[in-house]
Image (cartoon, rainbow, N blue to C red; front, top):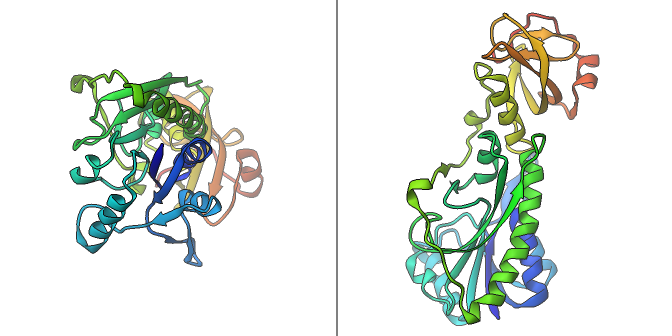
Length: 311
């Protein structure tokens, strides 16, 4: 089958790899190159790097909806005339003329069990909410955001210690498996299932401001928030006025009547939460430093009991 693939981050690479092995990937569409880190060196998106490695033509329009880039992109798609466009975390909304162009339509690999967690950050959101299951939905794309008919689903259990990064990797593998199964079934037809909008919820793009830990929440919610933001974009708080990233914690056996955000045990890095229970911070990164275990961090940073985080 002739395929055009649209995707940008690591999540999409597994699906592209799988498609290259079984189908004719005519071209890849991905977001424009961006400068990265302090040196502002221009880097390829993970999907572009995969495409280049496989000798696949790459398109990087600034917009698929308006302007000269959009017109050029649409003309390219008309020339390619793909049987199907496969989309995985592309980062752009496709106009209706693109959605209706391929013979088998545009198919999206979405990292949640739709209709729950539509939107840009379903992986982080489901862990923050304490879900015990997630999965991948392969769906037909339509005008609405993640509202199209569902074709195939796969489910993954979420252990209580799993981070968003670990779930991301598992769902990326599952998405690659499901898109191959979907394309195998397409020529003979797949019974599509409509989404129940009443069961939907939305997972918006996560801003830096949304990553700050709210210790007024119960300890379990704080714990889920930290692992749901790990490793990226990463939860943070402030210690003595400096930003402290927190990659992981554990639920502590310590309870305290100290104010929320207060360090109740300086040796275990135990922090009081809204229900009087504590979380022990176990993996952190000080401002300007490297990620390390809390034990290593505490060896180089003396912290006193009663210190309040977040200020």
